[in-house]
Image (cartoon, rainbow over all chains, first blue to last red):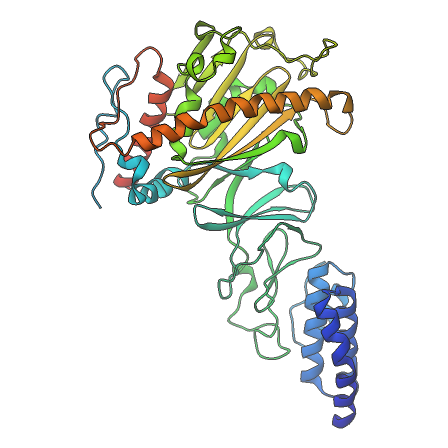
Length: 85
Length: 383
């Protein structure tokens, strides 16, 4: 399981780096959310929270609609306070 | 630090001397005035027109202090210290539109447009975004007291000044007829002048009409010295007015539209007054202007000049030519003043100069400003 997650993330790494380079916020939110989903599937809760955090921060910065849901996911697992949007 | 002697300033204009030289050429005195004059009062820092849309943010360096002007979603303007509450990183380094939150580029702490702290990623460890000892309610951006009047953004850095309306109520009342929508004249109505002078000399020159026939001879044909009057309210404001303001017209006789509902006083009247310490305002029947003096060092000042009209630029293209001509006219006048304020700055290095004497008849407004400055400094020293 751990091996599969590493492979998934390695495959995403290039896209994430490209999104950072281009300040492509929708892509950053999407890719970090995918990474969080993959980590969650692999039962890697710390890794999932880490990626979820990044997805949330970039959504918050961009004013993206996903920010509220990402914050709720973090709050539900005790990793953030629930914010009002 | 050696303190300057101010008692000679704090007396009647007939026998007073001007502020001593060190108030113009000493870095130590510049620092004292920054604290006791600029930061302790309501000082102009910018214009609302520079952050027109919700989310617009403009960082400024105000006498070495990093601040950021922000237009919130509801249209209100907030001014914050541009420093992250975490490790002190500068938050915003260039004008931009904030779509969602202000994110610190260092560790990504995020703030809303009203300064509230919204995210502290990994603050409790990887993937843990909260910590019992980090109270987000206490760590919002430091808000600087601000007030917007006639599109000028004023701030009181030390937070101790009386309320803006109390500090400037008399002048707001004096010009209440002009308390109506202002429309910035566009790019041609915006310019800045970098001047090698202490900021106070720009105020002093602006306050009086004594110099007009000598420095602005173009005005003599219709705006003689005797057509001007002094304005000086002790402890409050000063400037000068004219009784013969003449509207600019084009070849067809067309003139700029007036502000609505003005009394007859303004048919040919105009006034030019300094909001102490650093904002110069002018009002005429058909346009207004504001000049924010940015003190850069004791011998350097940037004059930020903006012209406003009664009608929106975009809706009245037929007045583009007049607006451009009006801006050019004022630019000429303000540029004519540069050699004076720079010359007085150089003159202040004359070690035997004693601050100078005032004309009892003509320099009341200038002395009024010196008196106010000296009072602020004495207050700061007493505090």
